[in-house]
Image (cartoon, rainbow, N blue to C red):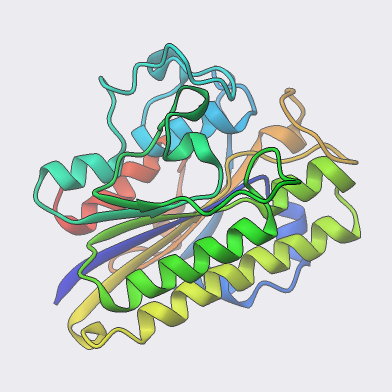
Amino acid sequence: MTPKVVVFGIDGVRLDTLSQANTPHLDAIAADGFLTKTRIRDVNPTISGPCWATIATGVHADEHGILGNDLTGHHLDEHPCFLHRASTAGFTSYAAAGWLPLLTPQQGGPIFRPDTQYTPPRPPDSKTGGDAESDQHTVTHAAAALSTEDIDIAFVYIGQVDEVGHASGTGTEYHKAVEGADACVGGIMDAILSRPTYDSETWTMLAVTDHGHRDGGGHGGNSDLERTAWIAGCGPGLTGDSADGLEHADIPRLALAPLGL
């Protein structure tokens, strides 16, 4: 069986909202493996830039040098992302993301350096690109790629939840955005299941959020609501016992281990 890996990066999802929302696809990952609460280390500000950099590289802000969403001055060349590490070992990597610093030089990026990538067009009314429209473009492209192409490891970013949290707070619209993000995950999972080679593959699926939100929206502080994140995963060898003590910096290990790295 050929090992394959996909990591879903879902921005700004509070764990309590995740538990309340209708999220059948993330629930399926958890049921087949685990869902665990994790806490962002104090050295990392509860901001997307430093948190995604830790998720990508396995080191914290005191090593990768990113303290905000301006990534200028980072040390990512010394701490490459898990996609680049897989590529240098001969595996094929892919990423799709609407938030530009993840994949482009915008704001000092990129954090991820895959073999191939997709960044959707940014709607005129979006400051970040991490909105529902961008997510739909992202899912469409990623689903097409992952349904047919020989990709060994992928990262797919979904940004709409964080965008809604900033714009509308953590009420009804935020709740709906979490369900919308789950639908995006479902679209990718369906694409993977449709692969002609699926029966000869073993897929590891990971999902992670970068930070939480305060009541009413917003993050960047030290409250438990902002510092609480979560990780879900399923695949060969991933069970509830796999979740003990996990944190953001473990994502590269979890993503690369199925490939023997």
